[in-house]
Structure formats: C-alpha cells, structure tokens
Amino acid sequence: MLFLGVDVGSLSCDAVLIDGDGEVVAWAVVPTGARNTVAIDRARDEVVGKAGASPDQLGAVIATGYGRDRVDGRLGSVTEITCHARGASALVPGASVLIDIGGQDSKAVRLDPKNGMVLEFAMNDKCAAGTGRFLEAMARALEVDVDQLGEMDRGATGGLTLSSMCTVFAESEVVSLIAEGAEVAEIVRGLNRAIATRTLGLVKRVAKDIISKKPVVIMTGGVARNCGVVAAIEEALGCLVVVPAEPDTVGALGAALIARDRA
Image 1: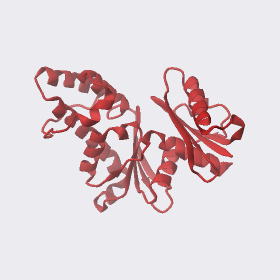
Image 2: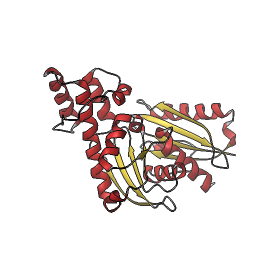
Image 3: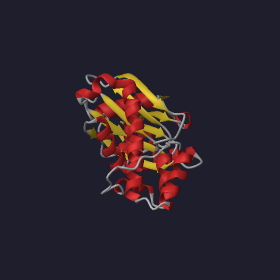
Image 4: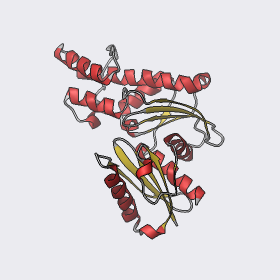
C-alpha cells in the first residue's frame, strides 16, 4: 500500500509517495502554472510512474497548500502549517523552529522538539516580500536567472542596505543601484540580508525566548535552495539552519505521512 501527499502551491505542485513504513518511494515538483488541476494530475502521474505503481495501489491521498481543495480523490485536506511541521519533524527529529519560505508567503513555526507538534506560528501572507516571487522580481531586475542568485553574493562586504522590502519598490531600487554603478554582489547581499531580517522578525514572534539557546532550526520551501539567503538567515539567527535535500517537498511529505496515519 502506498500513500500520497500533494502540496499545491502558487509556484509549484509537489507530490511525495511513501510506503507503509514511511519511506519515500518517489517525489515530483512541477510548475503550478495557470491551471493547477493540470499540475496536480501531472505530479500525481509522475510519482506513480516513478514508483512503477498503479493508481489503485494508493491507500490514501492528503492534500495541502493553496489549491488543496482541487485535488480529486483526496481523503482530506490539511493546512500547510500542520503538513510542513509533520514533514520537518520526520526529517529532523528534535527541531524546534521551522522556517518555510515559499512562492508567496513566509512562515515561522515553533515546534515541540519531543513530538514535532505545532506550538505557535507566524505567517507573512499579506505581502510577497522575501518570498520566491520577490526573488523572481529581483532576478528580473538584475537580468539573471533566479537560480543564480544564491551564488552571486560571493565576495560582498555587506555594506549595502535596501530601503524597502516591497517587491515593486525594491525592484525599482535595484534598477537605480545598477544605474549608479553598485556591484551586483553587494546588491544581492543586501537582498539576502533584508530577507534574513524579515525572517528573524517572524521567528522572534514565535520563539524569541529560545533564539539565544541555539535551537535546532530547519528551513523548507523553494527559497531554501538559495544558499545565499540561508547563510544570511544563519547569520541573523546566530545558529545553523538545516536544509533538507529536497526542501520543496517537505509539506507534501508531511501530507503523505498524515495520509498513512489516517488510512
């Protein structure tokens, strides 16, 4: 028997297939695009195909993310906070702080390190500042691929500070800085520090009392693939940030584990 978790986000639709022991059998990350139902079907077909399985082997499906109610045949829908916490605690037992930065929102979650339960969370869902959409806009202003940003702050001193985190204003500011002759590495370093400062504010809202104790922190979401942002967040928090091998799929993994539990 296999169990499927589907995380339908704004930028990608992620699917994870696990077996009865909770081991990952297959995973997939596909662009959500304008029609999320197409992305859902594609992600589902991809993981089933990778596993060499058939749809009738699925014991249960749990959906999460913005488009979770669009997943046909689901056993249920579960919030992103719960699914990310479940997936994170399975990958990093003992984690007490979860940072998730996706396509259009950021989350900081305080976890019980003993059982991975959610104790408190804060979410920045009113503005895309510091999210995947924000980084896409900055990459566009710098005329580079967004995947290149992670390495582009190498050698920067960190003296440049952005005055705005609003996506529109920050993009205009980056264009102005380029026109003034600012080094690209310094601009990217400034962007990373701005995201880290914003993330630190979220973490302080849920775990201010344990930051000084160097908690076990795990970061998930597509932005966790940006090593420059991760390094800036580590500097801001003053502790190591653990990034899973496939940070995009942690929510889908949590959903799959919940599907196994409920089945």
